[in-house]
Image 1 (cartoon, rainbow, N blue to C red):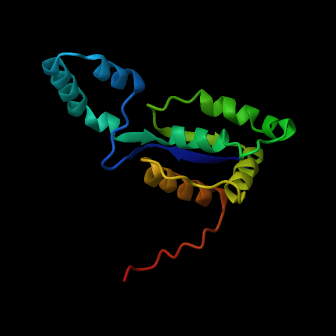
Image 2: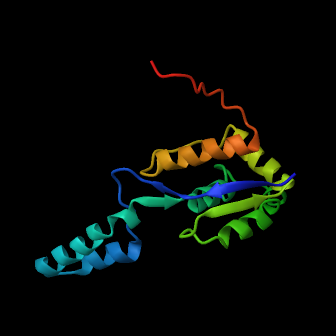
Length: 149
């Protein structure tokens, strides 16, 4: 049975995710006054740069390959889902439908002991997405949702 995953933008906290082209442009500016004006433009738009899309997280999960690689036959199973996720616009939020076969693939991926998290500026929003995805997939994470002490 197909299910839907809600894809949204998540707050990055105290980090800015600046596009490479913009960062390169800031480095290339020689005059200090111009550089300050450019930084000012970036910080005026910081709300845009302090968000990361679940599309990015979904693509990261789908395109993951363990150290040492995967057999072609294993990777081929992911091709259709990778193509669909690759066609998503990270600027848009909304529901993404996952077939029962794709749900099984994702369930297996999240339960794979080799699938580990690495420190990164977007680790918290990535973890939030993964917890929500695990819920959709029916994976019991053993998280106690009780009251805090």
